[in-house]
Image: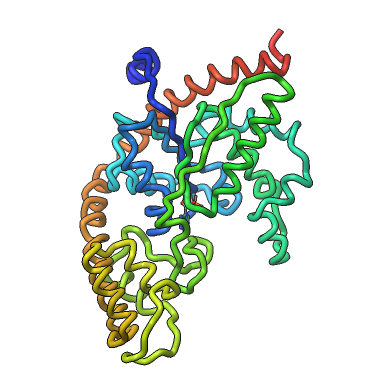
Length: 335
Ligand code: AMP
């Protein structure tokens, strides 16, 4: 309550940033460089909402005990990355009923053919997967997540670009039918990151099993990097840094000087993929090691998680309830 007051009565003119992550497994370096790093780096600059998207995760995590521990782990991960709960409203989606309420309201104005054009739905359909209603409706719940807080920017990896476009479309449609209500949000995608490739060359994703976990052990790092497929070029052959997946990962963790030197060696020939991978293992360890140590320390104080989330939930409920009051009036269910 005290924090909420500080947030809302100080004529907070900062822009608003919100981003969510599903507690569906250990976060990986794709999550970090695509979204989590942006959120942590910008947390002082924007009024920031960091959402644990547990109701989105429910589409795939359907064991209570597993969900509970994944949520706890994700909060610890965020704290280890430097997310400051004093600066940020850190909350879980399921603690704020307005998300599902607004999702239902949006369901009444969104059509099925429109949702059928979503990439995630089309991918699942192409793989002949049986799709549950929650997965089909995912972009609508995500629109509710974003629009409830008058969000200006949504830091995401490029895989989520379309979902933020959906949020904008839905906001415009609602505004058109019921009058000006929602701000139109913009995605924030880092040009030099976009989509981090996984160890099999596809997008790095928890569901593909091709990740380098953000808090990986040294052994896990080595195993993941050594498994990256490369072409059959020999040590002396010239290599293309723009298409090499090993190089793409170097770009995330190498210093500018290291990258320049490596690029020159790729173009000239004289470096084999084995050497490039060995270097990547070392640089990945250099990046992940301190994060993992910090996380191990924070994990000893797991008890704070429940309290932090309770505080964040109170904040998020207060802000979202204000918005819902306006929305309910606009749609005419408040007498
Ligand atoms: P998720 O794990 O699907 O909840 O994703 C959380 C955030 O990480 C979203 O903003 C995604 O866009 C981002 N993300 C996930 N995978 C990648 C990737 N391979 N490269 C860049 N960003 C990613």
